[in-house]
Amino acid sequence: MLITNADTSNVATSQKVTNDALVKNNPSINNPMKNSKNTPHITVAENTPTRPVTSLAEDCGDSGGLAHPVPKSGPDMRHGIALYLEGVSVWFDSFRALNDLSLYIEAGELRCIIGPNGAGKTTLMDVITGKTRPTKGSAFFGQVHNLAKLSTEEIAEAGIGRKFQKPTVFEKFTVLDNLMLAAPKDKRVSKSWFTRIDAEIQDTLDSTLEQIRLKELINKPAGLLSHGQKQWLEIGMLLMQRPKLILLDEPVAGMTDAETEHTAELCLRLKKNHTLIVVEHDMTFIDAISEKVTVLANGAILAEGTLSEVQNNEAVIETYLGR
Ligand SMILES: Nc1ncnc2c1ncn2[C@@H]1O[C@H](COP(=O)(O)OP(=O)(O)OP(=O)(O)O)[C@@H](O)[C@H]1O
Image 1: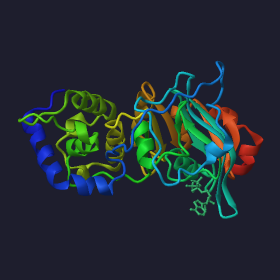
Image 2: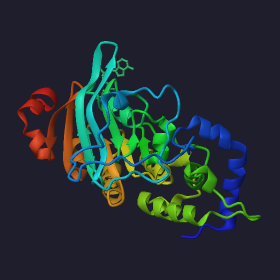
Image 3: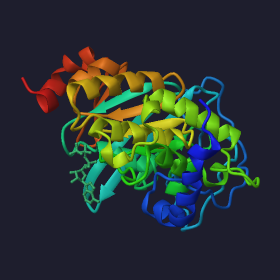
Image 4: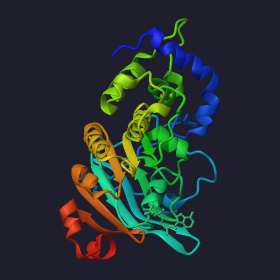
């Protein structure tokens, strides 16, 4: 699809006036990386099942408030693992929201995380995105991105995108405006004398619209979209940042059955090019998308396996599903 000059001029105008305020108010829009330098590659054993080996002090160490170097290249997933969490605990005073949790997500995997209220699912997502620091343990994205030491902006820049449960699209702006505002700032429009979209962004825009199936609605204000369409638009806004790992927090909450079905199809499409972690309570949806399911309870992993395996697990039945 080609977006013409006329189509995009309103994007450039609206950006001029609102970019700074919008970006400030929306963490999902563009996260410029600071202090970017190459980090030395950490060598690991050939058949490593897990992450690079670092000292515990380094794993849990506070960055002292300073930004740590973020490798300019994307995450190194040559060992096939996108995310390594080892022995992660998060304590709020004496309460353990996560308790010695180890989780490995393979590159290209779609992992579903389920569990009762208060199990620690949100805290887990917060650790992965840097919102909450592990009290103990280590968290790596690929081989070199130490999530315990990077800021939320650096983690987003490294390729982890998160969609929160509540859609936060800009209602007065069109679908196209919302997507363009989510594109990396330096690539939104070219610096040439006439307004046109950077070729790379055009490609990303085309593939995003293809994925989220909102091509016909690009000029519609986001406020007029259905709840489901807003959620898909927000997923599209994530895609504009070309994340490698996408976290979806209860993506089908409040959706109709048809929207839930569409979202399942969207997740399966996304899986072709991304690693996904989906937290959801809706078992019909989980059944439609899941390969491996992790059940959390009391901040720890209660069971892992296919949906039917975990559904037949005694401890899961006792703690979560009920008899
Ligand atoms: N900042 C905090 N301070 C104190 N306790 C917290 C804090 N954040 C979370 N908790 C507690 O940690 C536990 C895990 O919370 P979390 O939100 O991660 O669970 P959850 O599995 O996402 O639950 P839900 O399905 O209801 O969203 C809860 O008991 C919660 O009250």
